[in-house]
Length: 108
Image (tube, rainbow, N blue to C red):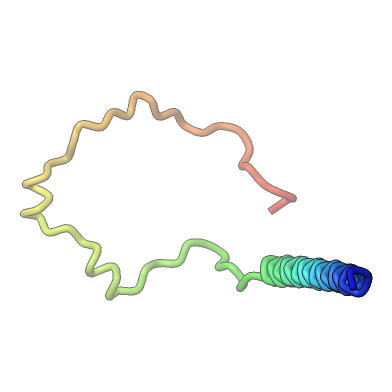
């Protein structure tokens, strides 16, 4: 009688080892698929970021444009506020006139 019990327990151990191996293989596959998914999403994000940053910006204005009248009116400082604050005490002794050619980038 000890022989069949021993055989059953060996079969049980083998079945348990096989089940553990299947679970380990499934876990390994899940991690591999998850890693590939993360890498794919990162690649898609990089491609989209490159396309967005490479798209041509709206044509810049030739020079500084004057502000609309409504905005300009809101930017004015009332005389009473200006009188309360004062001119200030900034010094222009550190300012030097710019000499030499204009700075350009690529002829622009």
